[in-house]
Amino acid sequence: MQLLLFGFFLSMYLVTVLGNLLIILAVSSDSHLHTPMYFFLSHLSLADIGFTSTTVPKMIWDIQTHSRVISYADCLSQLSFFILFVCWDSVLLTVMAYDRFEAICHPLHYPVFMNAHLCSLLVLVSFLISVLDSQLHCLMISQLSFCTNVEIPHFFCDPPQLLRLACNDTFTNNILIYFIGGIFGGVPVSVILFSYYKIISSILRVPSSGGKYKAFATCGSHLSVVCLFYGTGLGVYLSSAVSHSPRKGTVVSVMYTVVTPMLNPFIYTLRNRDIKRTMRRFFRKTA
Image (cartoon, rainbow, N blue to C red):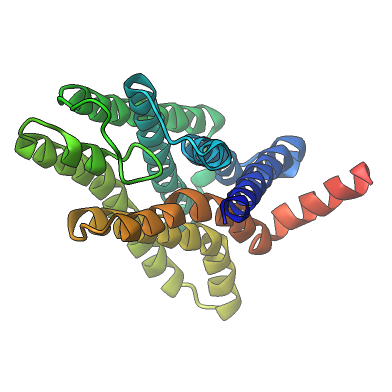
């Protein structure tokens, strides 16, 4: 059973890293893909690699060595990087929704407005916001007191699980963590919903059905990834808040941390003609 789990998670991790690296390589190597949408997509792939690399390699190592020990410092580091990449994923998806809003609702101003300088600035700001969120979580967890040899009923250092294991009163910390999660999660979701409300309103005014389909097609992949990311994220949030079963929480977290980053490259590759064309050209050259 251990060997089966080792092979299963190792293969999923390798597929995730390889798939996202191929997207980054495709975007950087093809000048036709040097547009804001693909610029943000390449950084989303980078965030997905970091997201899954904070938890899965340690889990694979634990399965192989039959040792599930992690030091306090390593636990805080894992927590910090996990929150960093989760938040960066979320903010980048928000930026991509805003990019689609500008492209569809203001097509004449889009090439001038979404220039290389603004795109780079948006990526930098999104990263800095993620660092802030990460450090706030890390600071709150570091203020807690833990007994020696604490057992975390999870495969990584998840903030809600750590709060439950703390020796001191965590009522204030719980409120702060969910408040921060509400801000850093709620604001991006609100921006995405508002962007798609405007996008759909704009598309419905297009007279031809062909034009409507073309406009919707440019948003299809992003919308699928948004639903997958926030759907599984909401599942993790609800399972940690409502259910006290470690097994259920672990299953939902595996979906969120392993399956979601693995599926993103497939969604963008299968639903995007430009990416598929660049991939075919790349594999022909290597062959």
